[in-house]
Length: 105
Length: 259
Image (tube, rainbow over all chains, first blue to last red; front, side, top):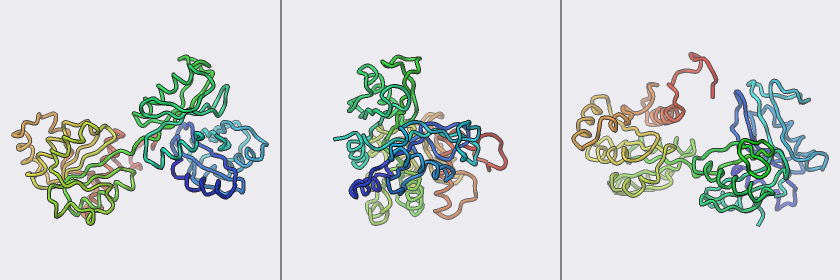
């Protein structure tokens, strides 16, 4: 969270709305530990990261859908053996669980 | 102030804080911000749940851990109605380096990259200057044993002490003070021969064999390091390996999970 604060503050000052995605769980080999945070504003700008670059694109889409009111906050899972219909996964074969939510708190 | 603003201000002030978020179950997304003394701001929607989570978050924060925990709707153990993600923003681990030498500057730099709060301490005022160690968080001009008597109680398993003085006049009191602390890593520079001689001086200073065994010396992993910078990498790699309990080998030559 700390590493994205400056960007969030700048975006707030410019009147942007912001969503944050945080790693809340991992299984197997995964590049970032729980707590890794990525912030996305309503213009699609990004700060921070939650993986080695494997799932960031999909996370931006999730965050934008939440900011647009098309989706509710919640857990998103990315992984090798993932049944959910995401076409992305971690190249390292692990699974990560993200909690994605608007920064409305 | 919102939870976010409180979190932002704590992080910017360098104050430890834990943020608990309901990530599954009723009151999804609600937050509780917990301070080291157990004070909490916000609510997860249930008074009892708040109380239990505040207690757990305080423990996680003390240990510097981040994890997801499960509770009943009113904070009951062994139930899974609510999942709470508890993220600790603990103070960074500390590395205290005794001896203000060239190796110290390189080690301080690498330790900073790894997120340590670095203290350089040397009794010799001409060497222990901020000018020489601008990368350190603090430069202390004091005797190692006196300094450790002041701060030793605050040190824990995440912290490291490196004795680079290379002079028994300083490194014996530094090691004698360091073995009284709970630091996870204690290393001392010197050749095998120097350390053999030092072992006797440490015995003479009253240290037990167990205490002397805590000292990693010669310091660092066996990677053939020569320059101060290479030595700094060898030391920091050893610090990491001791923390994780691994025997350092090339990943290619081992099997099993890589993290």
